[in-house]
Length: 479
Image (cartoon, rainbow, N blue to C red; front, top):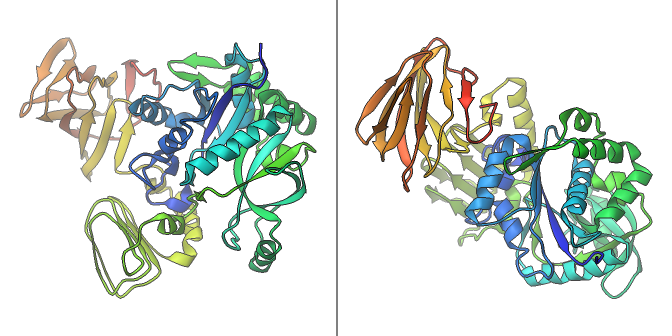
């Protein structure tokens, strides 16, 4: 067997991206959205690895609630993953990387100790050649037993990033890490930029799977122990690996920086100048966009008059602006954000207010993704609501019933197979059917085209939790 010859990407796809509300929501976060191009950020993260030597299928670590969207986005790009590991609760990056390292060791039968490349799923990198060169330089250091991080060549005195202070050179491409620095105030950031020996902390890492676990056990033995237990008790569920919830919940929550990288004497940093952006706020997307002659980045249906240096994004309806500058305006079907571009880091405070008020706008969009397709609320009042339901080719809703509502289905596009009680029949375009309270029912799309129907629910309670499942091809016990 060889040692450290293969490279397994570990894609960290957790988090909710609250600073990018209202587009990013807890159940549809920024890494699953097409924010900087036609593909989602997760899809772009995996795509940019193409062409690297010895690259293996990626391990994706994600929130359990995002599992079907992650799997579907990989399928859309014909991407085979080595594993999709589901975190029952969020425990930060140190435990996430630990369970991924254990999976890498378990799945690499032809490599005793593969290299793992840890990448957040929500970064933008525009210079792929420079990115690949840095990874190849890092692989050399990782094979030697070092723990590699990538330091972004600072383009400005940014106060929103942590910094890495470099020490003595290891070779022409790498330096020893002298110290990790917290996000600085403006004067400190200015001094870092002037000094030149500081890089932005990218949150990307490269090392042997065993070396990370070894250093984790040395500095944070509780994290290592609980992760090993949770992984050992994990179960396969369709395409997913479900970690044991009880042991993972007991695991301390900590970042890989605090748990390992700031404490190990084997940390090295490789400078990276590859057009990196962590897309941490709406101002980041303004910086990444293609501005018009007035400095505006415009997406969607927008009309402007005397508008300058602003980010304007419409997801649903017309936005019209007059006499504004340095603003962010983002409109979705159920929420509108207007902010000064210099204050967008504080969008998270609006999200916190919404959570205190138990507002659903922090969690879901009006259009909600499901493994079989999606549904979108189009009308609601006391005792009834209407939804537009789209079922993808091959999609199948669970065999289910409701205790407190009946449903009227009107097919507006395509043909679906409907089960209602003991009856099984086709429902065609411009036809309708009625689902009484307490009757088992299901809809399946056996065609090669999406089908659409309007569902009108009538009853005393219309919540998504009024559902009893009897069969489900996606293995769901939740909604």
